[in-house]
Length: 149
Image (cartoon, rainbow, N blue to C red; front, side):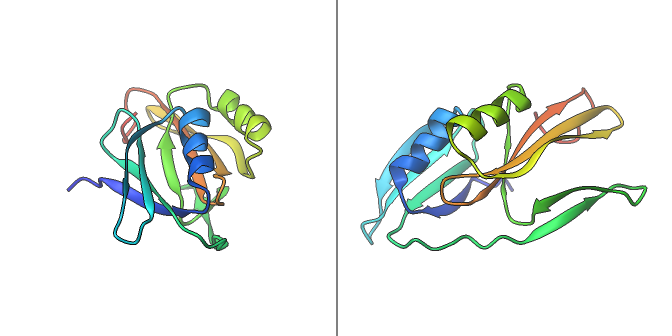
């Protein structure tokens, strides 16, 4: 059963749309207005799953709850937001991270790190989008990676 979308509420649709399309290179697939007169913008890439941006009037603060990734040997790898959107990227993670930090003034949650495993690795960083939603940016390498690239 495939997941088709993750919906998030945003306070400034144009700002969020620009962030996801211009900064992350995704595209606006479609827009619609619901029965409550809220605009929805569906953002995606080459895959079928989308991020649905729903414009709201309030300036609600996104709550953040963190968890820790623990390796098999018991060592702590990184502390990450428990609730987040994960985006597989196709470009150099460090370059994208630097560009987001400088050009988009993103809040840094976790600087890029490398998670290694048999057959490959995942390069991971966490930033916040304009409304404070945590984004996991990851680049997967290796032929035996268990998740899609």
